[in-house]
Amino acid sequence: MTSILVVEDDEAIRSACRRGLDERGYAVATAATGLAGLELLINTGADVVLLDLGLPDVDGLALISMIRAAAAHVPIIVITAQDDDPTMIRALDTGADDYVVKPFGTDQLAARIRAVLRRAGASGGPVPPVRVGELVIDERARTATLAGEPLELARKEFDLLLALASRPGEVVTKRELLAEVWRDAYGGSDRTVDVHLSWLRRKLGETAAEPRFLHSVRGVGVRLVDPGADEQA
Ligand code: CA
Image 1: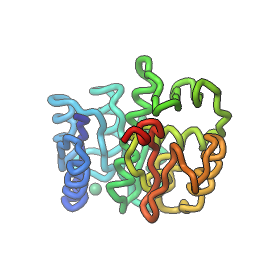
Image 2: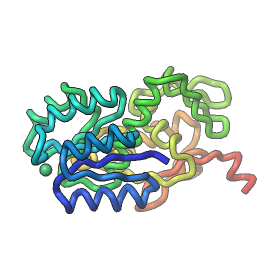
Image 3: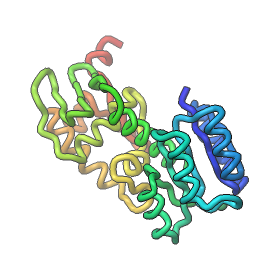
């Protein structure tokens, strides 16, 4: 089970994170101060640290350095206030991997967590290609093949396909895709996702009317399925 450490002094945000991530199957530990969080990290470890930069006891940027010293590779997602771009940029420079801006929803947060975990995995040992039926996606080589034939995918098309293939059979919302692929859960438009989906469909040799891999669920999102498995079901 993936463990998330939430370091946040705001009780409401802390418990919302705990509830939302717990519902999504993560093991969640929380701390209300920087030092308590650091102690938890050292004692019990975590797969991802979610870190509020405005903590009562330790400067957020200093804490990022301490976390890096204690757990060099743990992905850190910082929680930042909307109007605080300079701090966020410094946080990324100091060693944070990603950020979410308050207020944020759990869908966006979960998407960011999956993305940093994927990147952490990608920089580690060999990552086996993702296979969905005849579709094979090699994240490290950033290549995809369909029935052994290479697919010519643009960067966002590849990212979109990978985001869907990492959760095969699951409906992924357009907001989640905007957060994960475009890193823009608020400003982005569903239309952006629709356009890229239609390009991707064309390259997969299918249409929205006659889908094989990419199935839109009206008003919800889209899921990637193995058409071979669907026929057997
Ligand atoms: Ca705070």
